[in-house]
Length: 83
Image (cartoon, rainbow, N blue to C red; front, side, top):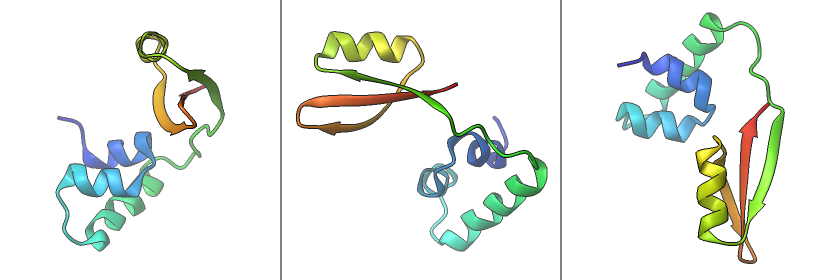
């Protein structure tokens, strides 16, 4: 199992890390975020490829290519993948 600080670094979502780690108090999660900043001093690439899908087949294809679901708006599913 990977260290929880690694997940904080990769996911960059405090609430996901809190849920994954099973923390009841966000202060515990913030400790992991602080460790992440110390361990990985270089900032994470925040550039993304973006794509959209209107059907389940299109969405499945994007997920198979490594895209992650972000949001649905007006019947269009939005996805992203780090560059």
